[in-house]
Structures are given as structure tokens and as C-alpha cells.
Figure 1: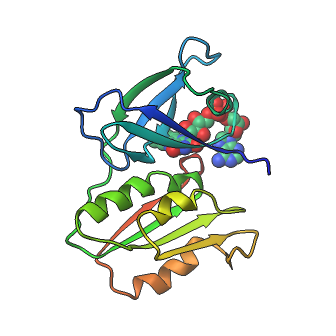
Figure 2: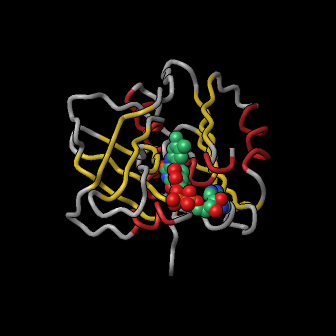
Figure 3: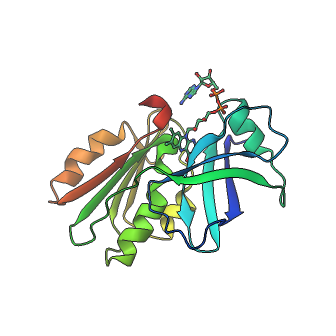
Length: 181
Ligand SMILES: Cc1cc2nc3c(=O)[nH]c(=O)nc-3n(C[C@H](O)[C@H](O)[C@H](O)COP(=O)(O)OP(=O)(O)OC[C@H]3O[C@@H](n4cnc5c(N)ncnc54)[C@H](O)[C@@H]3O)c2cc1C
């Protein structure tokens, strides 16, 4: 099946610099891009060896990134932004939409490191959900919804938030598709 979602895993260029969930990098293919500017892409997962990016192809910049071959070099700048202020002492609810769900994988990993496993996580998509294998590493308390398909729930993710909020979480984290903000 053709998909407009791709995953890029790069060697972490700055293993000594701590990267926080919610931070992003500016990236573009090194030396051969048609673009003037790097594209901002969130850290989906990282450790001291690698950084994983999840990318939705929208225009030329993301298309170039999706066509990178294994071993090719990236022009990369970051980490940028402040990231989430993660507090594992408070029961969390994690909510995301579209490609804005990408940084929530690292967020769940950080919550896990602070003692919260299986955090209630609600993910909303326009069509078919993606990236669920990445989330499955950190939580099996996952609900996905789609605006157009019953996979398994049809509707906006915000509809499911109201029910989840009744479970008295004390801290919630939300991240939506930055292109739609
Ligand atoms: C802080 C930050 C973090 C981000 N993290 C990620 C990430 O982890 N993964 C990721 O894939 N993207 C992420 N993005 C979005 C990503 O940076 C853009 O999708 C990318 O810069 C688009 O560049 P492009 O050259 O491919 O498309 P462009 O040439 O800039 O746009 C192509 C065309 O698509 C249209 N378009 C743009 N967005 C949409 C949309 N949502 N729906 C329909 N049409 C649209 C534009 O209007 C334009 O006509 C992030 C953005 C920000 C600001």
C-alpha cells in the first residue's frame, strides 16, 4: 500500500546534549536539496545513539526527505524549542492529532522513565492511523480515532477526551498537526 508517511533514523549528532520530548530539528538532505530552508521535524524518539523522525509528505521539502537513501547525509540543526515540561508525579493524559502525534512517542518514553507506564493516550487521524508500533512500545492504553474511517472509532479525538478527563488525570499533554494550528 502506498503511504505518505515515512520514518527516518539518524545517528544522534550531539549525544552529549539532552533532547527533550517536544523539541524539533531543522532538517534537509545534505548538499542536494532544492530548498533554501531546513524543514522543522519533531523528535519522535531518541536516545544517545539515534534520533527517529516520523514524516508526513506534504510538499517538496518533505518529499525530498522521504526519498533519502540509507547512508545519505542530512543537514541537521537542533535541538530547537523548549519541549514538554514532563512531570511524572502527576497522572497524565496524552492527546494528539495527525502528524502532531509524532513527538508523543518520546513524551511517553519520558513519562515511563518517571514511573508512569501505560499512560492513557488518545490519537486522532483524518484517515488511517499510523505509527502505532512506536506507541505500542510505551503504552497499551491507546485509543485511536479517525475522522473518516471506523478504525476502530469514527470521530474527532476531542470527543473521547471528555470521557478520559473524567478519570481524574491531573496533567494533560496535547499536540496536534502543526500545519493545522
Ligand atoms: C515545530 C514543528 C514540528 C513539526 N514536526 C513535524 C513532524 O514531526 N513530522 C512532520 O511530518 N511534519 C512536522 N512538521 C510540519 C513540517 O515542518 C511541514 O509539513 C513541512 O515543513 C512542509 O514542508 P514541505 O516543503 O514538504 O511542504 P510545503 O511546500 O511547505 O507545503 C506544500 C503544500 O502543502 C500545503 N499544506 C501544508 N500543510 C498542509 C496540511 N496539513 N494539509 C494540507 N495541505 C497542507 C501547503 O499549503 C502547500 O501548498 C512540524 C512543523 C513544526 C513547525
